[in-house]
Structure formats: structure tokens, C-alpha cells
Image 1 (cartoon, rainbow, N blue to C red):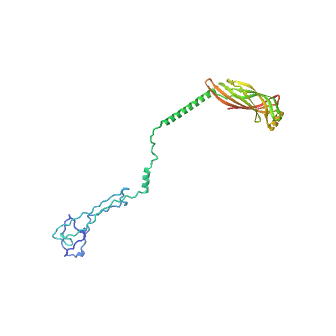
Image 2 (cartoon, helix red, strand yellow):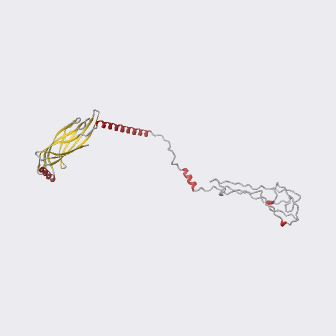
Image 3 (cartoon, one colour):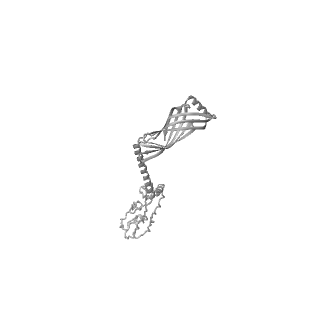
Length: 322
């Protein structure tokens, strides 16, 4: 029998394991069963960061360090060595595996989602609460002025409403009670001369308000043509009082167009001559003895009279408004 030298380092005995001796057998070496492979030492393989079974933290890959298997000493001495084993005094240079070093994987590049998230985090949020700021004294002054203004407006409106409900003021009325058409003739065929007298009626319909007429002027028109004017002296009207005033219009050398001259002749022949009277009044109402206000009044009257020399009032229509 001969001893076969083992060349596989995995089949070498460990340092702490005893060397076993077996009796020699007459079996041929080629029929011998090879010894089982030792599985005591397993190499630890690092897991890939991209493995689906071992997820790693996003952005920071894990770092692995695998130590090489410990070197085993084979300095065992034995006097007897069974067949098929390496004698104890025979040493074989063991191939030392290179150390395993797994370098730290480089950080993966930032994805589009990560970049957008970082940009959004740097942007100012629209839901942030308003920062506290001190109010300027000018703003307080403007606010106080606006508040005072609205208080005055509201109080003034309430006062006017109360006064109106208490006194119920109404506008004075202007009317024409009578008209006398004394004369009318044409000089040189186109210049009008006329004499007209009318009785004006001024009335105050208020029961608690006095009215003063400080400016009164009346104008006379024929077919939209101004022919005469008259000023009336100022006067006053007490509560529910009516006053009459004789207004004498003298028309002198007023030029009319040929159309208007022909129309005037036709109206005088028919006995119905049309005139217009317009009035402008400056009045002042006195509410009791402590409140008064002034305003303008406008009067417009359309009158129809008969022909001269005994022309009288046939029809009238007067309107007075502010």
C-alpha cells in the first residue's frame, strides 16, 4: 500500500482537530470514496445595494467588510498516518486567499423627484402666516379720520331725516292768475311792440316753514324768442301764505323772423295768442328759528290769451321745480 498525498487545502485537517488514523485496507485507491468537502468556513458575500431582497436606506448605501477566513496551522505530528492522508511531518504551502474588501458604493445620482423636492423645500411656502408688523402712526391717523368722517355723515343724515319728518318742507309754487293783452303792432313790418300785464301768484304750501324770495326774475317768450324781462322786488311768505304781484311787460322793437310775424298775425286774427313765461327764484326756507337752507327754483308757464286790445287769459299750464 502507498500513501497518496492530499493536494486540496480544503481537505486538510484543522488546527484544533485531532488527526485520525485508519487501518490500511487492501482496496485499490481508485475505488476509494473521496472525502466530503468541509463546510465549516463559508465565505460571506456582500449583498448588492440594488438587490430587491435587501433594501438599503435611500441615498446612503451600506458598507460591508468581509474578513478572510482564519489561517489554519497544520503543524501536527504523528508517527502513524493511515492510507490516503497526508503525514503530519509533511507541510504543503497553503494558498492564502486574498482579503476581501468591498469598497463603499458611490452615492447614486439624485433623481428628478429628489431634485424637485429639494427645490420645493427651498421655496417660501404660500401657507405661512402673516408676520407681525407694527402699525404706523400715519395709518392710525387716517383710520381715525375716516371713522370721524363716517360718524359725522351718519349723524348728519339722522338729523336731516328727523327734521324732514318733523317739518315736512315743500317747495313754493308759482302760478299766473290773470293776463291782460293791451296792445300789439308791428313797426316796419318786422319789429314787434306789445304791452302785456299778468298777475303772478306766489304761494307757500308749508304749515311749519317760512319762505323768503331774495331774487325773482320773469322772462317773456314768443315762439322760443325772448321778447321781454321783468325783475320783482324781494318778499317773504309766512306759513300757508299767498302773495300776488302785478308784472308789466313792455315789448319794444323786438325783431322777429318773417315766419314768426306771419304766425303772430294768424293767431291774433283767430283770437288765440300763445306766450311762455319763465321764472328764476332764489328762495330760503326757515325751519323754526334755528335752521334754514337756500335753494333755486325754476318756473315755466304756457299761457294762451285773446287778441288785443282786450286780450284775456284763456288757458295756462305752470310747473315749478328745483
